[in-house]
Length: 521
Image (tube, rainbow, N blue to C red; front, side, top):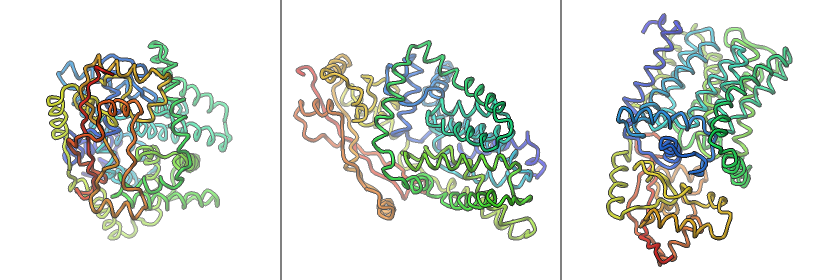
């Protein structure tokens, strides 16, 4: 494709929507991606909205609701065309991935004058496998955070303060901790000084518009109290216990497991960050290599420091890193363009070819060790063999079979126990399970996990514990013990990919079945 196509904004926008979408469909097998653990939990929440249930009354959901509501309502639209909730989530997720990539193209195009720089940025961005893999399952909340963060960065750069506040606010309505980006905006405006109050008023107006849909939803459904208890108080109660436990874990986890094949991104990004930081100190911007706006450069550094600080004290999973991904790419491109120029044509062509190979070779070799078809067959067989089951420790069972959980508790794991306020609550759960005619418990047990040889070596290298202690809600412990079960029947196993690098890094997770009789309890 000619350079003219890439330099034209409309043509570039179209290309960076179509190309990543085709890449996802062709190489990442979106309709066979299994729906596991957190992916299943977040997809289940949209299924709750699809069924017309109240998000915080019927579940233990702990996020702000905006993106979950959108996907849930899209599931209703998909049902008109006889699509299942899972099919709708996947199709929209694929298209949404194209939207994310085209939004990033707009950001890159606006930051750099040179077309080549924006092309390099987009290649690096679309070479991140994990974003594509997640998009093929569902447009989950932190993918929306990534999308809105990109748009927020774009409009900060353009100094569209109302839209900047709007998009960063929408990001926080998908994941409440994304409010960190708004703090970064406010602090940067203080540093810039010029027109502070007029800019701040527009940002706050955007914040109001961004929060309005969530305010209306919680008000019209009368869920303010449930939202406050679950998404605020309970999250503080749970997460305060792990704050600062491992301040440098995010530096490893951002690479392992999900970004193992993109280590180079983070090295380049770190080098680019340091160069920009020292240029800020010395006030010595290079006219050829630097980002167009010095105000944007300052904001990128403040934004990076704030999000890095958050990940240092409270990092849980790889998707917590998503708000920083566009910044890492920008810093990476900055470093590359700082070191190399088109004056060395042969080296430039060689480097560009290496960049393409590095970004996309893993997609070509990507394989799924355990498919959605296998997962659906397994759960359907269990449902027919044992009757009505209750999953403990994972919500995959309900999500895949597209059926509601028997109680408000989604996972029946210890963190949900904070919601049990009275001594008779367990008995209330038992009565509910009787009504639902639950006849067996299927439980995920992380303590018997088995890892592949290469996964074990990598875990040992980083000093990460191979297995986890098995913990369950006390009420579930009571039910299992009352049925004289010391150990369940190992019914099936799932191979979970830990790194999207061929099929070399994986876990074997085991699930146990406990037949139960609740009539005499």
